[in-house]
Image (cartoon, rainbow, N blue to C red):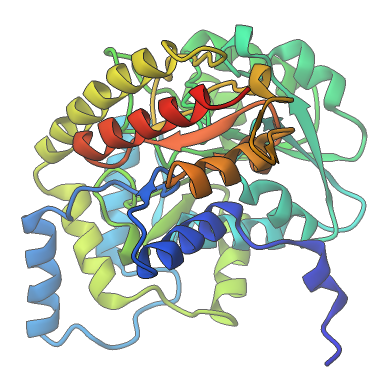
Length: 397
C-alpha cells in the first residue's frame, strides 16, 4: 500500500516506544522498572475528578465550541494574568486536545517549506518532527552542560538566518530540567527583537520548579515580544491530568483563529468533560501542586546523589520538571559478555534487557552522550531501579 510521502518525514515518539516496550515485557511477566514515562505518578486530585463527575451528571456531554468553552478560556485568562502577568482576550485563547496537539496545530499554522525553526538541544523529542511535518527545517543549537543546558544569546544569534521563522523555548525543559532565569530570557529577547521571528514558549512544566526558583515567560520579561509570542501550556503535568488531554495556547488573535480553523477540520472541540475538569484545576485548590513538587524535589535530590556516586556517570541537578539527564558516555566502549555499549541506544537496551529498567536514549533528545530517567514514580521504585542500574554498570568491562 502506498502511503503519503509526508509520513516518512517523521518517526514514532521514542518515549512512547520505550514505554510500550516496557509494558510488553511486563506483560510477559518481567519485573520492569519504568523510568521512561513522562507523566506524574500521582492521581488526579479529588476535586478535579468531582468536577468531571458533575459534568457527566449534568449531561454536559455534547459538542462545545471548537476552541473551548468560554468558562475555560476565562479561567486560562485569569491564570495567565495572575501567574504570568500576561493579559489576553477570549479571542486570543484556543483550547486543544493536549499541549502536543496545541503545538501540532501551531506548527501547521506558522511553518511551511523553506522556513527554519530554532530548537535548543537537548530538546523534547517531538519538536523536530512537528517542524519537519510542515516541510520546514529544524535548526538544532546544541547547548552545553556547563551552561546548564541553556541557549545563550551568542548561540541564538549564530543560528538565525533570513529564513528563521521561530524559536522554541521549553522551560523547565524536558529532558534536562533546566529553567531560564529572568535575566537569561531578557538576554535572549534582545537577540529576538533584532530579527523578524516568532517565539513559541512551551510552559507545560511551569509549576514544577525546585529550590524556590521563580518561573518567567519571555513575553512577560520583554513585553515588546508579546505580539510575537505564543504561550503553550496545559493541565497534564501540574495537575496529574495527562489522560484528560487538555492543552491551550495564548497569542496573537490571527494565529489563534488559524489554529481554531485547523482544529475545526481535525479533532473539533476537546472533550467537554475534560474541559470542565480543567476549569476546576485552574480555579480550585492549588495546594496539590506544592505537595507534588515537594515530593518531586525529594526524589530529585536522591536520584542525583545516587547517579553521581556511580563510576563513569555524571548528572547535573535539574531545576524543574521530573527528569534527570545523566552523562554516561565515558562508559561507551565497554562490554558485558557479547553486548557492547557504543551509544545511548545500546545503553538503554542493555539496561532494559539486563537490569530490567526502562530509560530513554539521549539520542532521541539530540545528545547521544546521555540517557533520560524520569523520576515520576515512587521512591520505592526509584531505589529499586537505581540499584539495578548500579549493578548493571559495574558488570561492564
